[in-house]
Length: 236
Image (cartoon, rainbow, N blue to C red; front, side, top):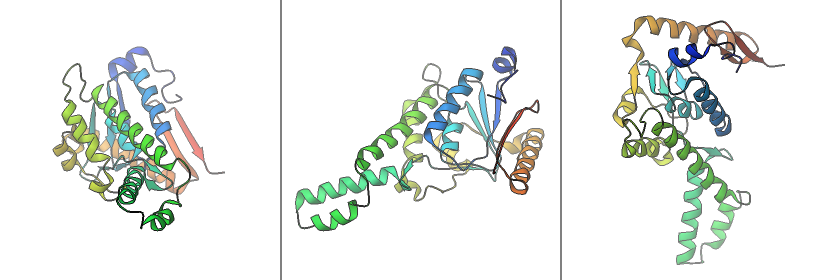
């Protein structure tokens, strides 16, 4: 809100937003709030520039934009939600596997009791809700911007993108880096940062100066706009 304060209606709607995003991820709740606010301020005229990484929830934010700009060194990541430090969809699979085996025979009851007792009550339901929430959010965002269902929507393509990026078995690890060519093959609207040398120089200058600030000061989060309005959070 600090970065958007003072922008005129024409600046927001006509000029749109170039969001330079560098993040390892975060909570789904914060992601929903950010996407909702930016869409209220800039509508659908948002493109995300990723000079290095936008992982997990950062990938979700990127997929809410009309297009994503990546360099050769840039990457997004899987969007499978994590709860209790574990991929939520793998928790669901583990419970389903236990049910299947116990339906066939009760001999493995002690084994599954030991395996599943590490989870708190309602873990299965929490994991299901987390998976559904993440997939629904990204599906809705894709179908209301990048693949607007009222303009050029392709529900099958969106399903393929969401299912691939949220599949822990497919991606093997939540920290897997997914690069430009794989995303293009999936059908994501990805453009090369190298195609516009002026934009590349400007975006990388912002990225490098931000990284230097975050590594050489006690700042741990930095949000700044083109007018110099800045919000920085520091370690105490």
